[in-house]
Amino acid sequence: METPGSQTSLHRANLERVVRAVRMAGSLTQAEIARSTGLSAATVSNIVRELKDGGTVEVTPTSAGGRRARSVSLSGDAGIVIGVDFGHTHLRVAIGNLAHQVLAEESEPLDVDASSAEGFGRAEHLVNRLIETTGISPAKVIGVGLGVPGPIDVESGTLGSTSILPGWTGINPSQELAGRLGVPVYVDNDANLGALGELVWGSGRGVRDLAYIKVASGVGAGLVIDGHIYRGPGGTAGEIGHITLDEAGPVCRCGNRGCLETFTAARYVLPLLMPSHGPDLTMERVVQLAREGDPGCRRVIGDVGRHIGSGVANLCNLLNPSRVVLGGSLAEAGELVLGPIRDSVSRYAIPSAARQLSVLPGALGGRAEVLGALALVLSEMGDSTLLESTLPAATPAFT
Ligand SMILES: [Zn+2]
Image (cartoon, rainbow, N blue to C red; front, side, top):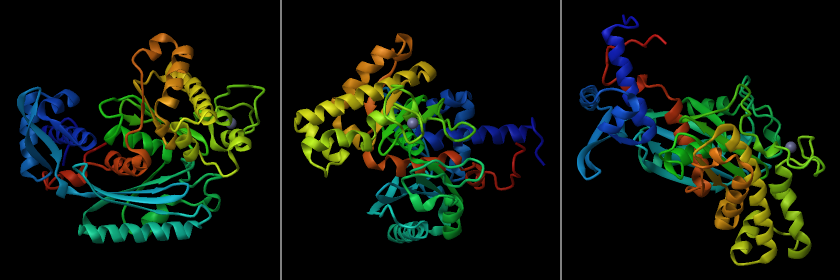
C-alpha cells in the first residue's frame, strides 16, 4: 500500500516526472531532464538507470554544447501509438513509437459526402493494413489519436453541427473508432492537433506558448499555453475566425457581421477572383498563382495576411505567445502572406506583446494533424503502463 508522502510514492512520482518529460520531448539529455523536472542531477541519474534497467527508456551517447552527454528517450519497444486524421477531402493514418519515430504513414482521398460508417470503416481498414505492413504486434498499441475537422461537444463527446462533414453530426467519433479497434481513442479538432504536431515535431519545437492558425473552410487557432493545449470548459477556445473586424461587413455563418472568417476563408475570398480568373479556382491554385507572380492573386493573399494579422494581434495582446505558426495550404504562400501578417501584428498589437513573437510557416504541411494525433496519445496516455516493467509490484498511485 502506498501512502501519499511515503518514500515509495515520492519515488514513483519522480519516476513519472522523468517519464512524462521524455514522453513529450522525444529525447532529452540528463541535464535537460533535471532542468525541466526540477530534480537534482544525481536523482535524475539514478532514476534514468532504473528506467533503463526496466526497459522503459533507452540511453544513447550524444554531445551537448561540445560536451559528452547522454540522450534519454522512451524505448521504441515500449509501445505503439496511432494517429488517424479525417480531413475535408482525405483520410490519413500514421503509426509511431514512443521514441517519436514515425514508422508508417499513408493517406487516401475521402469523399466529403461519405457516411460516418464508411469513413470509420475505411480508417479501421487502413490502420490494420499499416499494422500488418510494419510487422508490429497489435498488442503493443497503447492508444489512437483521432482528428476531426469540426467542434467536439465536451460533455457528450459528439460532433457538433459542422458544414464540413454534414452526415456526421451527433456521432461520437471516439466511441465509434474504439469499438472497431479495441484500444482507447483520444479525439480532438484539427486546429488543436495541428498545434500539437508543430509543437512536438515542427516549427513549434522548443517553445511552450504557441498559437497554430489554420485557414481552410473556416479559420481556427490551436492554443498551447505552458506546454498544454488550452481547450476551455466548452472546448471552443481558439475560435479566432469570429473576431469582429468590420461591423458593417458581410454576414457570417455564425450570424454576426464582418468576422475575420468573412475576410479570409475560401468561400469569401475565391469569389473575389472568379470574375477575373474563372470559376474553378481553389485556394491551393490561388497560392500557386500568387507564387508565380499573378498580381490579383498576390493582392488577395496579401489582404488575407493583413486580416489574419489583426486576429493574431488580438491573440498576442491576450495570451502573449512566443510563436505563431501558420498551417494549412495558405502557409505555402510563404512571405507573400507571412509579411502582411507581421505588418498587421506590429501595427495592432501592443509592442510588449509582439516583441518576442516569431511568425513562422508550419513545417509539417498536411501532416501536421496526423502527427498531432500521435502527440495527443503521447500527451494523454498515463504513465502506469510504461512503469509496469520498472515497478512490477506498484499499485496505482493515489491521485
Ligand atoms: Zn462569425
